Length: 254
Image 1 (cartoon, rainbow, N blue to C red):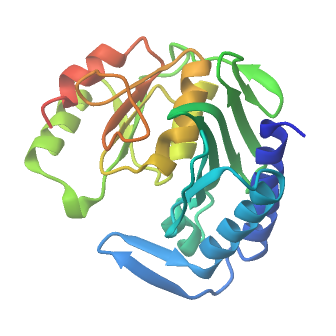
Image 2: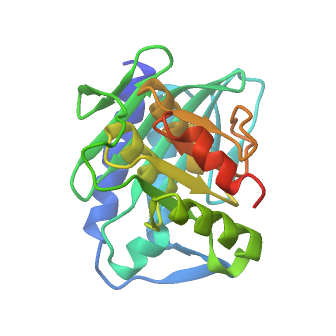
């Protein structure tokens, strides 16, 4: 079984577990002023780690909910068991499972699975991006009234500079919305539903899989200064490539 097939299996098994508890009463804890975690996050994470470790026991693994297995392996799996936990808690159907595999620091495999409507996004380095098995590519968004940009930043950490960047985008004719799942938002750029994404205060598990998926679909991902992204990036701009420079000019100083 290939890395890709193992990752897909892990994502789908976690997705089944997640959906069994969706819109049911569940306990949760606050991790910070703007982040919560449920028992389902931990169950999903445990399932993913189990599937991967059974096949690749020597690989490193880092996951959002305080799990980091570190050895001398050149391979590291990067896991977000539920990206969009707050949406999940409130019963909003916009969340996903995100799994990436990095080799010597560079992401070579990305898998994002939306279990609500069974959307599976995959990409392998140099092999293109796929949605439910069919190849996908970003588009210019000309079929829409105006370009749609998804914005990701907690209001707790919003500054006047960040708001200024958003206003600058709006003045240039962009339609701005917040959805609450960084990885899934980014995959919608790859599919052509969305033209851009602006994100702050992110971690490796938020962007590792989706970043590769966008690039393999012909899109572009950088930090806010236009420099190449990595799993260590904390602020990113993702786009269909055609609008990237315009977005950067609006938000780079925020």
